[in-house]
Image (spheres, one colour):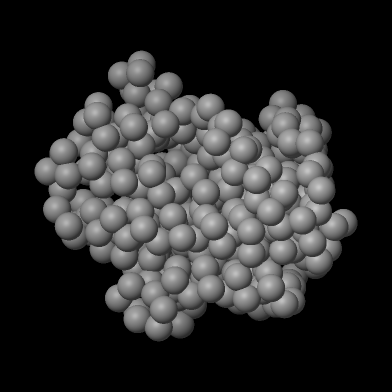
Length: 354
């Protein structure tokens, strides 16, 4: 496996580099990246308008998805090269809104949302469990457990770095926007995600140890140049849902589906990694999620999504949309990897295409 590794680190406190940390993939990202680093602003909003109009699929567009990822990374503070005082720059926010509107419209057009149940916690939970049980997306975890090569396992970990080194953060945006039972449920889930007060048990840190154990870089953003638009779109979906208050229902639904489709796959990932010779330093992260997510799925379905639907029936359509969108975007990542591997190819971007 051949991957590049730029070396942004995790915190603004480490100091900033004034050069863009990623290679642009088109005119929009070529304009956005230098601006985020404090460079001279260009007409990137007009460029985004034109790119959206010309793109056959915004969700699979490398230029637009990289630009959107970078704009969200500014809000997270995860890329030191991005100047903190530009987080709310009006022109950058305007460009983000252009891409977001098109991306959200794409998801709403293509995602099949289940029939709306009655607004009781139990009915909503049953609907979500039925939705995730009916998901026929490709199973990366089964493939890894039985067939994946060592190179393919490394590639899977590279794709996972985009979200998992920031695990739980996109969903935490919802905490101040919730009240009562749903807020308590989300805080219960997120407390586990953040290690319950033990920094060694923070899930993002456990994954960082896993990628180090596999011989990969744990620097956030190190592999952005290597992953395709479909991988960026998965992370961008939850960032869009989390950062926009009007999409509160969608981020709650996304988390519910995310937790409800995690426990068994993580058991299979651990089995596959051990089959390939990896030890507990790599597998502990996946082992942790087998039990944790079996508990989280019940809390997320009933106490979070179900209770929110009872308290705010107006949000139920977006709860279902967020859950269905989670299955859709993550299913597309799985199909991309498995299709590439079935052809004997890498799932990462070819160097000549960068």
